[in-house]
Image: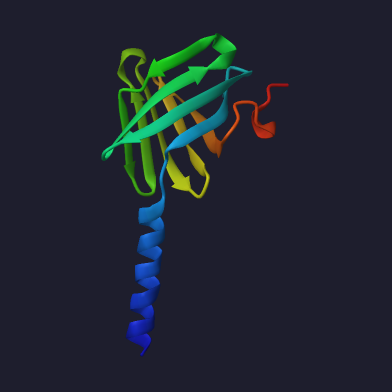
Length: 125
């Protein structure tokens, strides 16, 4: 009976992880040398492949193509090769906690899945 209960728990846990998806809008704020910059990833899924673009509203940059988008639950990775940027994080519910690496420097960045670019948690002060 104990083995059956453990098997059921394992199946439920694996289905929860399998069900996680990164489609949608993910917002965060990155602090670089004392300045905050809003970051927005727009992620879609076609067939079995993810595609994404990046916006940096505070730098008037929109629609930057993300070269690589990968989800290997719970690990998430975004890469933009032409600017040498890699973001790697851990997916948990509606957040991704990770680090943005570019030009040899790493910065912590938490992304939140939201519907609106100006979500209360991401408004610039």
